[in-house]
Amino acid sequence: MQIIELIYAEARAEARLLMYAATLIGLANAAILAVANAAARDATSVSLRFVLLFVLAAVLFRLSANYLYRETAYLVENTLDRIKLRFTDKILQADLLTLETLGPTEIYDGLIDNATTLAAVSAQLARLLQLTVVVIFGSLYLALLSLQALLLVTIVAVLGIFLVRARLGEIKSTLRAANRARVGFLDKFTDLVEGFKELKLSRRRRDELRADITQTVAEIHDISVNANVLFAEKYIFGRLHFFAMLATLVFIFPAYDPAGVSQHPQIVAAFIFAYGPLNGLLAGLPTITRANIALENLVALEQRLDQSLPADVEVEVEVDPWEGSFTGLELDGVCFTYDDDESGFIVGPLDLRIEPGELVFIVGGNGSGKSTLLRLIAGLYTPTAGSIRVGGQGLTRENLQAYRELISVIFADFHLFRQLYGLGEVSAEDVRVALDKLQLSHKTAFVDGRFSTLALSTGQRKRLAMVVALLDDRPIYAFDEWAAEQDHVFRRYFYEELLLELKARGKTLIVVSHDDRYFHLADRLIKLDRGSLQ
Image 1 (tube, rainbow, N blue to C red):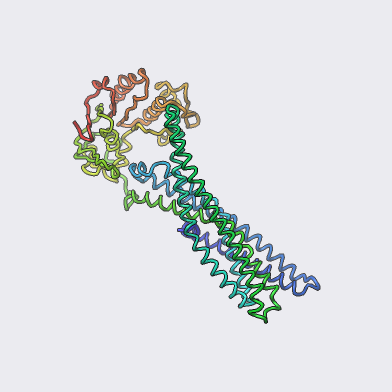
Image 2 (cartoon, rainbow, N blue to C red):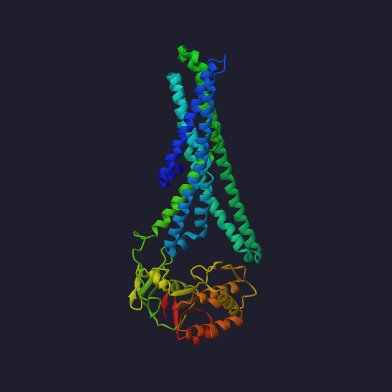
């Protein structure tokens, strides 16, 4: 899909108005040229009629051009707004496994960087529309002066267009390679920032990453230089193409049509006026081409998201058979396998029941499937076999979200939001009490509905996540190695006080843990080994 096709598809009515404005610009340009030629033929006196017509045409051009450029900017931004919101909806509707497969780098680059590239194209689009219509009306005026002249210019123009299109594929492939290299650089730079501590501890690791970044930078450099050279060659060829058309009129046309020599100056003036602005279009060609490549990337990313969505994305009627209460969870022959896992690792089959108010520890070695089981229990992974029932009700698309609303989870790779999304009107006093309880009041505060800072240690961030979970107050709590980054005081507090306090309040607790010194506190241990229950 090209950028112009996108604009027309997203906002057909507005796009038609832009075409009308561009048509008025073309008419105004043709009128200015016609009045100027008519006045030049009778230069012995100044005609007030020609002056008024010239001024009116100039005013029409000014008003139409202002409308075209302003409304094109609005249209491009409105189109991008719809695309961003559509992506937001599709990401929210996608399954967790798809987003984990895509990864944040591809999503960020695919949406944000490409959308930024598209946002910069509005002025070039307006100029493209304007110049296209100017050329059309200029050609019509040239036809009025001499059909033979228009025929000669058209022949040379068509030959030039074929030569230009022959190089277009090379330019597009170069820009696609630049996009792939940019994503690779973003991946490596993310490693540089997020792995800063690890890099400080190993000179060899640091040097190898820097060498990798250096190689990627050099690759981007070579590709970018090649792309700019190709664009420059295209621009230079475009100017030479214009010179060739001008030379055809100046040197060949008089011999081809001796009868039209009397109008030769007007014909040359009409050609320069109509085709001269193509220089501006050629200068903007890199922006248009980059926008088309960015659009291709956006479409490809959207298609990958679409593949993870069910055919009927919208659930017609969401139901809540549990009405906010938890009456037991049962896994019956549940299996899960990762599509891209070449090792053939499978979690399951699992037969498991968790009772309301039960404190369950999930234990096992690294890679045993504990986190995968937690995602299955949370309703974030869909079993590849078997079924999950809650209170005797099987999970379906209609009731899945209602089940998810029963559980608060702090994953090992949890994310903190600065705002308390989804908690409604939360009392600042309740937040303060929870912050005091987890000894975070001296590190962050709740001001104007937001935490004042999230710049905390990993252990403190986990405690802040616990604050949010406690405020959410759901029937089921699940924690994935929550105590792993806590000091011995908070580790003991978590197991010996907080968990027992929540259990006393009737909460169901599912805890992934390696802390065998606290296993005796559990009502039951669920042990996993290589994806199977032991």
